[in-house]
Length: 405
Image 1 (cartoon, helix red, strand yellow):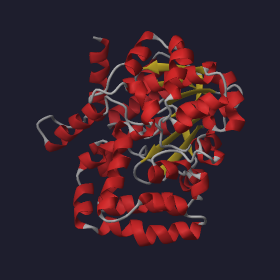
Image 2 (image 1 turned 90 degrees about the horizontal axis):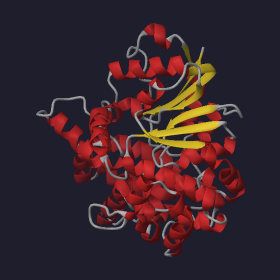
Image 3 (image 1 turned 90 degrees about the vertical axis):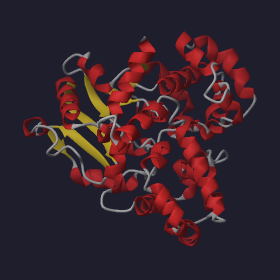
Image 4 (image 1 turned 120 degrees about the vertical axis):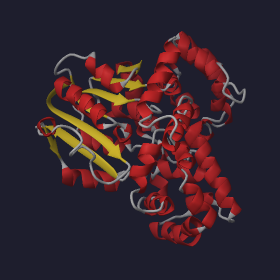
């Protein structure tokens, strides 16, 4: 029954249209796809997040869990507590695995191999010896169960975790599609300067988006399910442009605006894994200098299988002060947004900060929630533009910061 209830909540979270409509069918197809692993790696830049959130030693954070990279990375900033919530069973299992591994794997070498490489046979033995005994029964059952094509899920850490999940499948398909046009996306990783990155993008990558098949394919909402983009967000992302042109601009930012050697998002996109030999090409939680902090503080993370708004409804007044919504609001209607911000405002402590991303550039809140509610919050417009520019993941149109007035 519990699984049925959670699956129903996923459907409710992403469906806004009638089942019999084309949009409704797309939404339900996305809800079905979203029940499994979507993100083996989260695609929001935690360095930007921590700058925007200004985390303090007494900060109590609540965030959508997703792939868990940012949840653990926030520990570097030394918050008091982090509540990580998600409706996706796979994401909850992945977060609990990461927390247990941070606490109980014997050293950094094991931790790095498990998550930075995530493709080594010794990871299975490490799981059995050090991590499995620390997991709850539900998480153990998930990792030792099989996916839709019969593979043991824990086997992903032997064969390449970052090639699994909806996002991993999407990136793999993008590599295959590029090869059809005689383009090797891994070539981008050979660039030594921003100038070389720009030249490779303009010569090899950009022309692919002018191909007729690519332009037709990217105009189909299901084609972007692998990015975790539901139909409602697809429309916001496209706006008045062709989706191929929107995606070209976002990929241009990823390929050209940041040094490849320092951008682990680019390594995932162009190399389907992390740059194993380069510390800066890893999320903060996987960097060697941060390992002792992550291990010592992992016990501050509480992972819960819950709806974000409902979790807030169960929280006391003025009990939280950092809220990370990722891009979940792009999926919401006005009523859901109002319920969410009513609970955020009730539970917010003085100086509270809310950070979220949107597919389109502007903040989606004006005109969507009551003016009196929105007036309680100060939108940091100029700072948000800077955060958007510095977000290395590059997929979002806007990164937005609101501070309790």
